[in-house]
Image 1: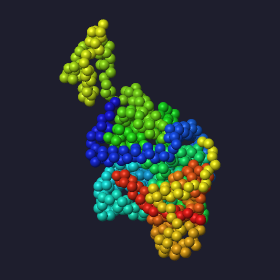
Image 2: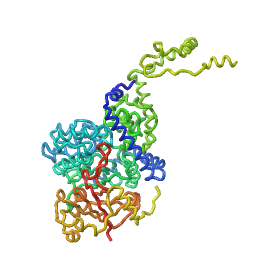
Image 3: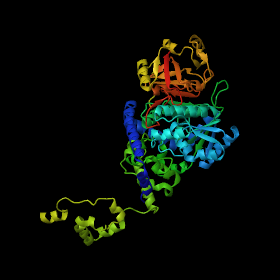
Image 4: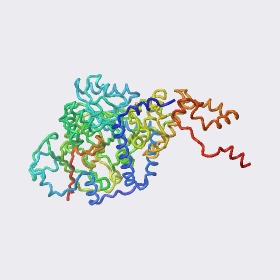
Length: 454
Length: 155
């Protein structure tokens, strides 16, 4: 199994894209270290504790889900269950058809879960107008592109790209000033918040004990999308639960520090349900749609710990492969090291199992992971699984190697020929030899040295 | 996690430092002269102050200033905690370009804040001005929410 698709992507990347991704990733890696160092006396024990809590959540998932449903329902939050993407989209569409006119605007807050289920195309297919309101996601949407990073969706674009897109969409006069571009988007998206009938978000945490939805963000579009429209729908993976709000400070600090190098994100929204009778504003209905979409299967298997993930993106920023190839090379909404495991775990190894080879196994991803997911171990297991399933071709012709190494005569002949081996057609196969330098020994061979010594 | 008594008398000087590093400010009541006569939306408990400052009542989408009351502030993170309720529009602290937040109590850390108990109503923890770094990682304030946050200590 080789990685031609990932490599082809890397080769096709524009130089500016590689520079954008590399610079931004390096900056985030640096700020993560300094912020987490200040926020925690002992970052190691904080990560261990977070991993332990998430494992406890996965062990007690069924009970916690039912507890959340009971508490949330008591708060007048309507809880729905979706076993796959189609079912989740259907629930969203049913709600939209009931509360909104055909062609109504749906304000979208940034959410990986709705990317995963392809909600925007489902909404468009049903005649609604979903509009992404996170600045980066908005650019991705008007360009007909895909987010290339879990946290910073347009890390692969520069200001000139954004400027051209905004002029094309009639947002204002051409400018390359990031502040002016941001204000153009602000003005445009204000109208979206005022007009939207429904707001759709993801969820960062769902609290079993209190039935509250927790959302974190920096821009404020998430607060607008969940506050201004009449109806708020949150789509969340079933693994997003936490037992109680006592665990929140740890997770909020780990998430903000790991994702963007902040002590805390600008807004942490604790949503307790629809507006009360005397409240001047707020949604009249709040819905939570729990998404399985392969997660219960992952829960039972050898990639279970991948469900600890809190979507901080730290493993992308630090990954030497991601920095070279950018997120799109992974061909899935979840990119980078986490995507290389999560994508095949959710969708099956025959779909995108080749991603497991797009790694040097350097271990940096596991070192920075705030919930200590053993990503390198999982990548090895995925490779093993793919090999056993006989997927793809193998790079190294082990059978030929075994023949060589199994016969003393052939082996000696091989060693004698080593100094001129580079000039001969390689016995180990062209593709393998092409990419590798044959190592040259220094001085005598071991056998020569041994003979002289004895 | 060991249960400790929350520290409810945080360090106001630390709060000031944190707010400034976020691009927000710790302000005195006297300095609010700067917003005299502006279009504003306010928490109804601040009606007397609004009259004193000659503020003009405006809707959520038209106000230049939103005046809010925080349950408490958090020193370690430079945050204010705002709860929804009949006295204040949720969008009043979000839509206007300037959010002025009155606060009386200060807790030391985020852990203290949760140990003390978050309000039961829908609540938002606000840490500085709205911000984005989506374009080339360059920090821009005021993308959707307020670009300026003033925290005023109530006597």
